[in-house]
Length: 243
Ligand code: GLP
Figure 1 (tube, protein in one colour):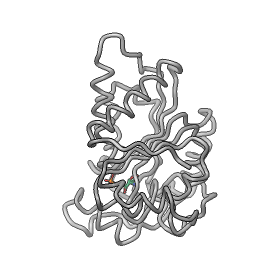
Figure 2 (cartoon, rainbow, N blue to C red):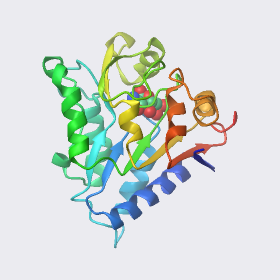
Figure 3 (tube, helix red, strand yellow):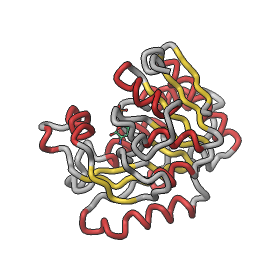
Figure 4 (cartoon, rainbow, N blue to C red):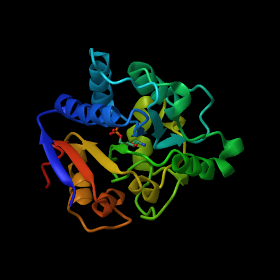
C-alpha cells in the first residue's frame, strides 16, 4: 500500500516534496525528475524554487527532466502547451538547463514516431528517479484516462469530455482544448523509482480513494500506484476525506 501523508495545505505539501527533491539532487546531481503539469504540482515547484535559491542549495545544472504528457496539435509556442508550461513553471524558476528537460512532441506531423522516441529517451536517461503526479477527477494519471492498460507505454490518447471541460479554464474557449494528447503510459510511470502523487480538495477525494484503496483496475488508472513498491501520496484533509 502507498504511504499516505496528510498535510494542512498545499503549501505544506509543496515544502515536503521540495525537501525530497533537494535531498535527491544532493545525492544525485544528475537526477531525473518526472514532471507533472496542471495546478496540483505548482506549490512544489514554487517551494523548490525558493529552496534552490538558499545558500548551500545543490546545483541543478545537471538535473534532467521528463514531462508526463503534452497536447497534440496546439500551435507551436501556444502558452498552454505543456512545453510552454514546463518552461514557465519549472525550467525558468528552478534554473534547470533547458536542453535537459524533455516534453513529448505533440506536433501532428511527427506524432507517429514521437511516442516511441520519448519512451526510448526516458530509458536512455536511466529512467526517472522521482515522478511527481497529480490525479484528474476521472482518476487519470498523466493523461491515462479510464480504460488505459496498466502496462501501457507512451502513446497518443483521446481526452475524455470531463478532462477537456476541467482543462478549459486554461483556454479562451472550451472548443480550443485539444481532443488528443501524447502521454507516458501507466507502465512507463510505474518504472520510475519513486512516485509522489499529490492531490488537494474535495473534488479529488473519490479519485484518491479509488487510487489508494480501490480495486486495482484499468477503469481507475490511479489505482496502478498500488503496484509500485515506493509510492507516496500527499493529500490535504479534503482530498483524504473518503479514505
Ligand atoms: C491534467 C494533467 C495531469 C494532471 C491532472 C490534474 O490534465 N494532464 O497530469 O495531474 O490533469 O490536473 P490539476 O492538477 O490541474 O487538477
